[in-house]
Image 1 (cartoon, rainbow, N blue to C red):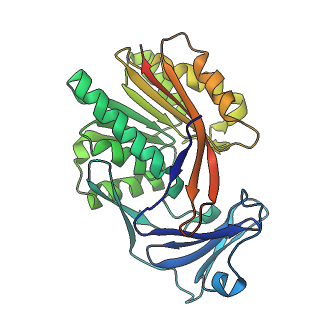
Image 2 (tube, rainbow, N blue to C red):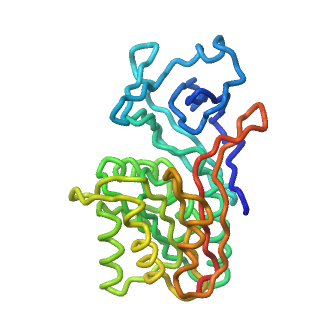
Length: 298
């Protein structure tokens, strides 16, 4: 197993976690929000946790409500992230329900892996890659790959996060002509690609446990991931392509993803592991899911 651990992210600090919560500093704002994986006791005392000026309180329906000490949500927050090629990207932050802010910081190690693999493969093939980001959210991974010169297709069912992703492209001064934002159900988009014969050199799929498509289509990870993975392999080129799949669904383990990815008849190497983010002042890692990375697909 090869774990992908995010750490030392400019503008972000994971101060502490425990009792189902995490304490962070994001773009200068100290935040407390839910973290169900944090089943241990926090290391810092109440005096440190009380410094949080923005607190997310989880609702019984799974949503959340933010309470800000100043009674106003912090505005104009931006995080800067440097790619392995030293390209500076800018991600806009906003406080949303479910305790989100537009960036999943534990994904930084994933962005690094995608940039490295895309760069390597483009050098080998001698052309820009076509990259497909499914469940793309606000576009951090898409921008990371776009910065390498690849052509990116970014798919999400939410019009709001697609607009957010476009803002991030503009903030980062990247070529907006090389990225296509698509509001569509992920399953429907991949099926359409299959029918039309469209091919991609790399795919990222970071699906939720459940959700809805652009036209209220239902997504359930346990019931639908097999078909989606099989369809994704069938829209990949056979020129040494790659496919990164992650999961945050309770009970699904890394070997299950590896078995899923190995089920398709193609030559490939499979890397599996856990995703996590390291605390800034100690060696604890806050778990954030699992992944399987299929490379050298042919």
